[in-house]
Image (tube, rainbow, N blue to C red):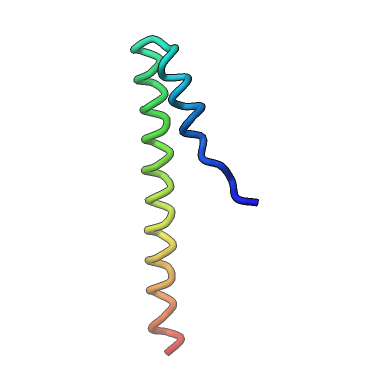
Length: 55
C-alpha cells in the first residue's frame, strides 16, 4: 500500500496555529526536504564514482 502524503494534516495544523508555530513547522519541513535532497545527491555521486570503475 502506498504511503499517503501528510499535507492535509499539515494544512489543518497550520490553519489552527499561531504565526510563530507555523514558521517553526515550515522550517522543520524545509530542513527535512533539504536533507532528503542532499542524501539523494550523495547517492547519485556515489553511483557515478562506482560506474567508471566497473566499466
